[in-house]
Image (cartoon, rainbow, N blue to C red; front, side, top):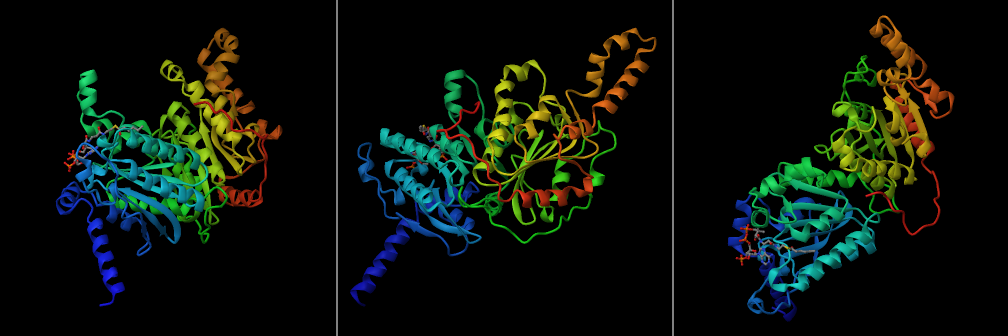
Length: 515
Ligand code: HXC
């Protein structure tokens, strides 16, 4: 055996030892919880044989609390590069089998190093979180590590896509890295996210709550809106991530990959979807499915603020971001949560060169003391800000109701829409016909012998005069009144025309959006 061959064997042994992470017992414990190991997660997510690991032999330098005697393989995190459907990504996965995936200084340095690579190479960064948080024995070194991650998350925001996958505990300040990234994925029974855990809550407030009820996957997918994608298993979660990566570009200077155009496969035609009674709800996702390639609509934050629908689809092979009021949930009103949901997505699309198509059917902002006191003014303003700020192609289709503030907010011509189309069923008015007639014809209605008959006559008069698309079309606020069946073809045409759109904004350091 040559000395090189001996060296190679030694290298293999060293690698095998570190690759065992926390050892067999810890791996068994991890798997007994229904969790894959950090390494297997990376291998399951990336293209076969594409993973290249770095910093395998990094060791911690902590002293005190018995740390000098502790060997923590890879310092509890695996980092590297690989591909997903051939597209390069940078990735890290915290290894819970090594000191609970806790974050010490060298662990953090491995993460910040791969984040720096991602930002320099202009490729997405994927972080798999499974950690007990700041490594208690390392004190401020661990806190410094978190701060340096948050700083990079912020610098990379809007430059490269950042994806967080929560596959275990993610507690304390650790939650702020995912919160600063673009998309957060959670898995039933596995993900746990909170600032302070059940024990602290019990001590400080005397309240008892389980970890699952406090910060489990469903909580973040349905109630808090912290998560964007919810899955039943890790494998399902990886499929969702892979699919997302097909819709987004590598960085803010590129466009998303294009695919072979496919006709929609949806069983209903657009004409069949909207009920003839304007008060009847319908599922706006059916409209989206009936216009996107292969009827493939990839919804984001499906379970949270469902009165607005956001997600990606393709038209003629190109990625489009869809924003649509959902008449099936609270009549599709805008409220605090749905405004936040829409505004953030619009800003994402704008940052990453993804055209935005808006489907509008909503009676306005949700009235009520709760909403007012929850700050619907500043939350609602985010939608106005996001649409006005966006310079990607912006197209609106008014399906039915476009009342009041809602008409303006949902990418109206006045906020810089490039094209606004309306179906003949569109009603564009300051408010709904009943409310409007009751106010402007109050005297006539009060004085009439048959008040109900007069009210109905006045509502009809109002609808004929104002609740239609033609008043707005006469002022040029709508570019064309179109038949529903023409929608996909018109969108395709408008998107082609807008493909090389250029629109500049005054030079500024950054705006100050309402928060
Ligand atoms: C050091 C830790 C650790 C930590 C876990 N471990 N968390 N070591 N620092 N933060 C170690 C445990 O000692 C144990 O080591 C191994 O990881 C596995 O942990 P277990 O407790 O046995 O696992 P489990 O029962 O599954 O419980 C997981 C857990 C629990 C819920 C995450 O470990 C836990 O509560 N940890 C502390 C969480 C926490 O309070 N973190 C600090 C948050 S504050 P051995 O050697 O026995 O296998 C924070 C500030 C960041 O993060 C601020 C940024 C701005």
